[in-house]
Image (tube, rainbow, N blue to C red; front, side, top):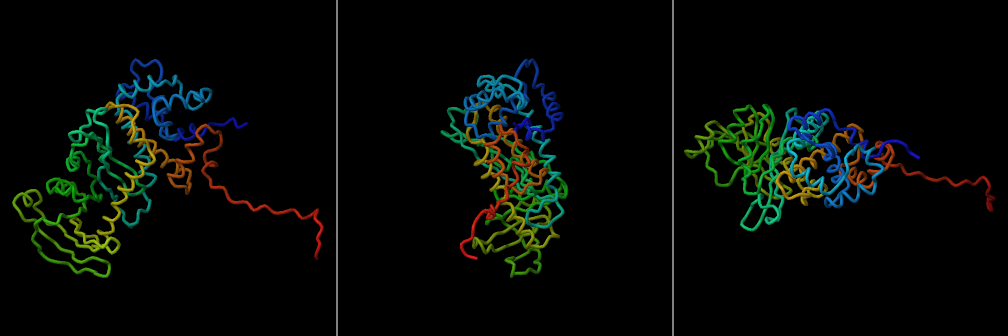
Length: 388
């Protein structure tokens, strides 16, 4: 009999417990709590993400069926549907948001030298938002349209390792471009935006922060070409121009020069125009960087398919944010574990393996090691040969 830790406990050992307690104390999360602490709540919600549980009753039934193993999994409080629902209702979601940012900082340091397709020393981020539809009668605070509810996840993705460094949850009526005001700009970094974020005043603030941006241009924006630079049309670059904006408000919002690059995408047979304040990188590298922006679209698709962020365990805004932030924390935790164990398995494969092995007691590294096929050799020592 294996007397070691369960797979779930081994995975939770990668979490910095001291930093979690600091987050709890910052918002007085355990004030007047006698049982079922914030740590118990986090473990239950993390288990629900890893085991693909669909509801609070589902979480209760699954954990109570393994009651004798809960203590060794770190869960000290009694698991109850009502207790967990109440915790999600009243405990501050910022506890889990701050803890997720602690994990994000660790993950960024581990993936700092990860290759994302373009060889650059600067940090490269993609910023976008995705919409999660909700029932307006159950989530009246998440108003989107007259008879429809939704929330938006505004996300800044570090392309090295696909680590979400900034997430802001709003109701569906908030326009994406407004979240540029909440963005902390890192000097020297490169930010990728789709054309929905084309606001010259906000882009100029990024420029003043000594950071760079690459954004798709709209077809009807007005500009004056100052001069053109030579291009290599064999790589798809059709024009590389230095421009000034036309129009009173555009020139007022962005008074300096910009660089405009026209590029033909041979795969999609589309002509694209980019605006950037980076005048040193080659035009083809600018186009390749914007191609990497699709990593954030893949990230949104991935988390919607493999994390529990489309069906929620509670209907309040606090409960929804807690579930989202714990889901992000689990995603980053698995990424940290993958890097530290140096496994070649994909995150999808790791999550699938963990989902059916959380109560097993085998070494985590052994569980994630891909078994090598063994060829059985027949023993002919006792066989007689008819032909020699």
